[in-house]
Length: 165
Image 1 (tube, rainbow, N blue to C red):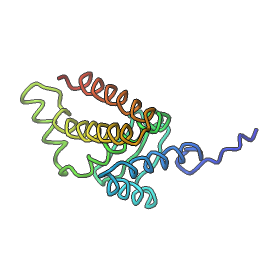
Image 2 (cartoon, helix red, strand yellow):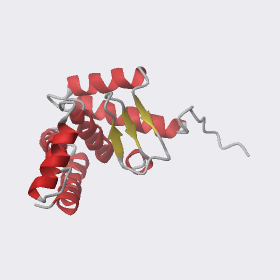
Image 3 (cartoon, rainbow, N blue to C red):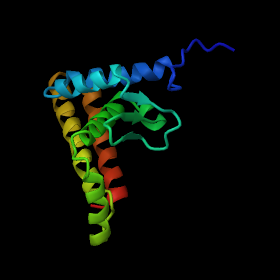
């Protein structure tokens, strides 16, 4: 039975790919984030930003800087997906050994092992969402501003749940 959807080699259909492109377009609109969106577009066209509908995580960035977005993030609204992309893009800026340092730092201090790795990435997505909220409110895009505000609460709750205060 035909669904009218085209499926790519990553298993994502055209709607999923369009969601990804729409989230990148939103990032590009936000003041100060054009370069982030440009980098994400370059990754996308180079096959280094992809969708994997079998991924158990929301999204991941590997040691080679490839970003893979899972079903939870790709099916989120575009504000949530944009925040996830900003988060994962931040991981591309971290030193190669940041994951190792975070793990062993957590082991030695008996704190969540990924906290040192994740905290600045969560902060990057929260910073993006705050700028998005202010810009949207100033532009009269109240629904978008409210979505950004709600997503800030979601991101903050996720960090506290996984990594503590």
